[in-house]
Length: 204
Image (cartoon, rainbow, N blue to C red; front, side, top):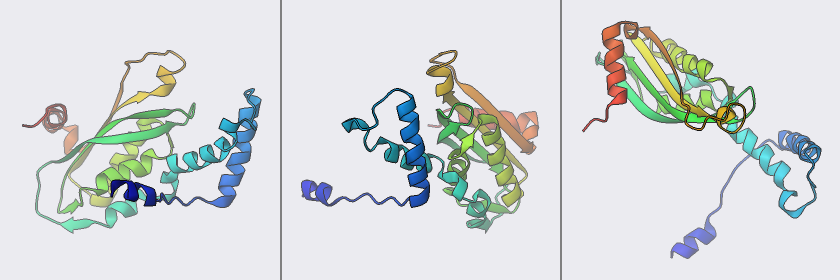
């Protein structure tokens, strides 16, 4: 039964044909310029695979994060902090086109409106799946939530490892970059500390 299920599995991915063809030609040239034989068996389909991979890794350009949030807004009197933490982040450094990855922690204090919880990780992905720097990514997530919900405050912290620091350049394998951005109530020490404590501690 399991074997039959695996046999019938079909992965469906749709990519723009013109963009795929154009990127494939570019990657063929890049591979050849690096000194490889583009006609070698292992590389014959690599340009097309990379072309599709890059489209997937940057598909955030085709998403509207603000509309994602607005599609699931609800009226609610809750006025306590809402935290979504440990959101996986995968992005592409715009300086070297190498990945950076880690976790985002997002919180807001409602002001009459809340948003479906799944929408927060979705907008993190929508912004992350672009050519990025971590500082801008942090601000974009914060600004989007602030604009859509008009809450009493928003807090965003991202902790990430950058392959441009680990694979090349300084080559420091254990370095982690942390960025933060706050609005409203989170600019007050007491509220910000509460958020940091909730993010840092594992709740039993």
